[in-house]
Length: 296
Image (cartoon, rainbow, N blue to C red; front, top):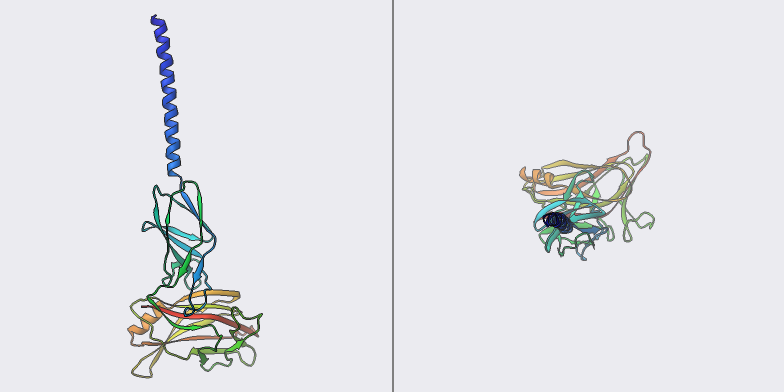
């Protein structure tokens, strides 16, 4: 009897431990399922504009993701993003750009509102989304120039002048684009906006949106004028490198506008200029969809 009892006890011990091990594995499996992330997939996105905001062309190449107000990370597109959420979460996506066209300098573009939605957890599953961004209300378009009805630049003494082209093989969007060609007889250009704009100081955001292509570099300058005198001051903002294909760039003019305002130069114009290098005989420049905008 004692021996039989011992056998039963041993078997019970084995079964108990097997059951315990099974439960532990089951619990671990449950924990693993609970900690699986929900994935969101972003393959494409869109900029929505109305008739007063110009083109919806954009060059959004990264997104900044926030979950319940906390930053999760910056993701280049297309992106598959894991989100750990045990319950419904508030997702906010901000559109990012390469500031001044520099691919290593990602920033949130300040003039587009975040795209927000509620995410229901689906552990291990993938939710495709296509964010739609819009311009915020607290900003001003100083000018929009798509060259369809003329342009807002005049010659500043350069040898070559800005012309409008309607050649469909040269136009980026719509019926016309702006064009300058340099050669032996006209080997430089310098153009300036016809109007003066009162851009803000105090580090409020100022950007020039521009779609362009060019065979040699050109320079963008911000000219400031004083309202009480004819005195002017020029600040070099950016040298735009050659680009064989049409490219949309976001030129950050915040610092230049603030420096000029702080010095009393409160009225502003933009200058584009370039000249042929000695080893180059011809160059072409094309522009479309220029927008100068600033934060209120």
